[in-house]
Length: 98
Image (cartoon, rainbow, N blue to C red; front, side, top):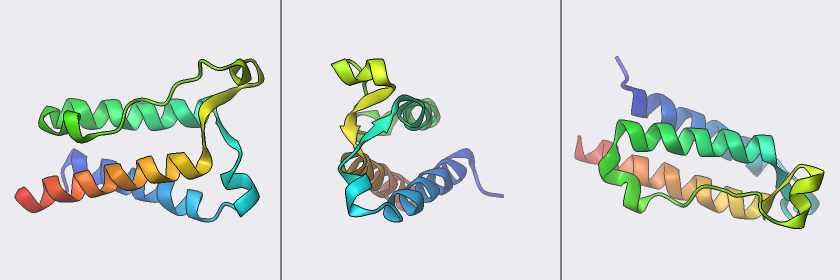
């Protein structure tokens, strides 16, 4: 049976697929705070399951700019896509060591 990290990798892969379907215009837009919170929640769960990979994971997405008033985080879709790819690759390294 797959372990929790396999399911977390599947969640990140689904994130990647959704982001990959965004238009070029959308990729230039800031992501919503709920999307950032969802990503951060996945990061937190990965850190809890495999603390040894924490130094290799990206930082949490923040919402500290003036755009937070409008429900937007501090990063764009394209930046989130890069962070998601990083997490997927870190999980791949972890799985290959298992």
